[in-house]
Length: 250
Length: 235
Image 1 (cartoon, one colour):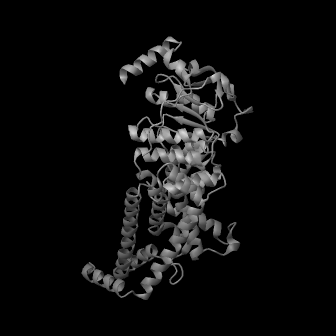
Image 2: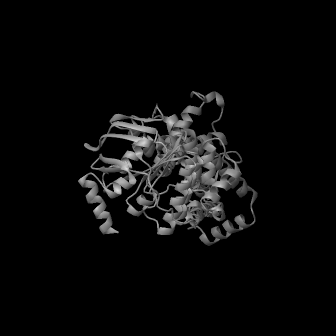
Image 3: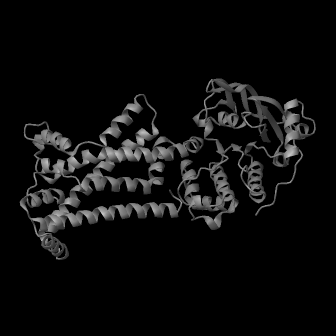
């Protein structure tokens, strides 16, 4: 099992080139405004961690930025291009509960590779090796453990060679070993140039992974700062309370 | 009062000796019903998948109609197909009336709503589960439909078997469009009806035993498929 990712000193948000821009994003459902006029600059080469209390709109923001939901208002631009189906081809998302096809582990990867026109066996082998699932290649995906299923979901996302990888609390229900394995894979993907946008409630995980932190509360972004600044000197009262709560609960 | 013991004895001897007349009727029944299931699947599976995946105005009405068609009265279907295929009907030129082809058409019409409605339910359930992941992976609609059908294959096979069970046990439609002609359109259900009315309970019972055996086999197959799919976590 891979080792946990060591704590890294974050880079400054302002020094990175911009990969994405969110302007005036609004999302409503059931008559309630769940994302409220969000503006966000997304740096290119960082691991951006999205934090906030339950119901803050973190997962919704990720889904909107990935184009899974349609906003009521606002713009989302990636690499200077409006978010559309072609832009989405350069993105992938891993969900909190992995949705795996009712097929073998290898067949799940083949499906994703075929979508991008390269269903090569050696690519499947490489991905399986990367997520340490080579021995389970021919097993039904749904018989894997929770951690293995999430590693497979991550491998399937990476099979599409995404420029941006969204992760919506992918380790929420995993034990520390399985969490460490996921973090290592994410870290490797980042080192290969994949932009990471990661939602987590886990303060330790955020400290290990974050270069910059987006803190959300009640559908708004309260702050977006380099990680050390957020953890050492949070600006908003909501962030201070959130971090205090996290420290108490851990 | 008939001699039931004698009738059962004759029935078993016909079955065990693989009586040629009995075999001919059984094979025709299977040919007609399996062909109908195949055709009904070719129509019903894509239709069910389309309704499961698409969101369009009038979808609820389409669902109500489809579900209602599951209970089509066989004699009414038989009558409609008869009117279509009779010499005076719009498809009379095909000369299909009183042929196995007409019986296949009638059974197809009877069971395709069953295949479509049940497959819609199966595929929609899976689609709900896969939809967000498919959108994230940007899976084209056609590939998504193919993936859903493939991943639901065990459940869909159960649907097809349910259709076959209904087809092979059906009598009203096939007797109208087939005519129950000996050596040509006589199938198990129509033969049972005829032989019973003639008082030849031996052959009727023999056919009944075969029909029940087929029904039991179909149900056993459905159960085995469910267990297999659950065992391999494909369900």
